[in-house]
Amino acid sequence: MSKSLYIAPMALALALTGCSGAAETEAGATSGDAVETVAAPEGQKWSTTVAQTDAGGYVMGNPDAPIKLVEYMSITCSHCATFGEEAFNTIRDDYVESGRVSFEIRNFVRDPLDLTAAILSRCGGEGPFFALTKQALNNQGPMFEKAQGMGEATYSSVLQSEPNIRFVRLAEQLDLISYFQQRGVSADQAKACLSDTAVAEKLMADTQTAIKDFDIQGTPTFLLNGQKIDGTSWNMVETKLKEAGAR
Image (cartoon, rainbow, N blue to C red; front, side, top):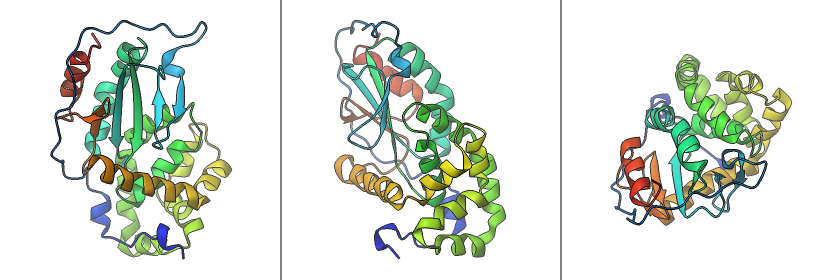
């Protein structure tokens, strides 16, 4: 068994916790003059301009936007789901579409359920990533119910499977393959993504890098132009965006 991909069986209750403990954060946003809007290239929209980043996330918007917002998020985090409901459409329509702000999501995987859903949210590539992530967050309730129904013995058995079938088995138990199939990711495509151990290893490695480089301890955590925002609510994040010139 690949030691780098081994996830020790944990108490099922731990996998169903809402979010990691909130970390102390540094104030990082800088005040400045209002930033001018930047028109997208003819025939394009900044909100549909999505690319994968060197940090392993996906960024939406003007790649040269002077204001760069990054969210470290976990699909099993209830506060991340709340933030998505409150903020996503406004970030996309009012900030990203202006060309002044880019918005990047970086998965911060906390548990096997989170890792499984994160793999599937990325399985369709760049285009549907943000929509699939938002829908995965909306599916927390049914996913947690399925997880509770598994019981500790089944959960432990799944996690002790060989790495190339572990997340396929977990996704089947959680009914995630059919959930994503209804959203454009075929069953064969989903199983191929879940079987690719390199994808899971990369997500776990990126999470460790986030802890090392930015001391990310809880989700959601936000960076604005590379500095932590002192706060996790949309009200706090939007205030920092405006202070940075997105107004």
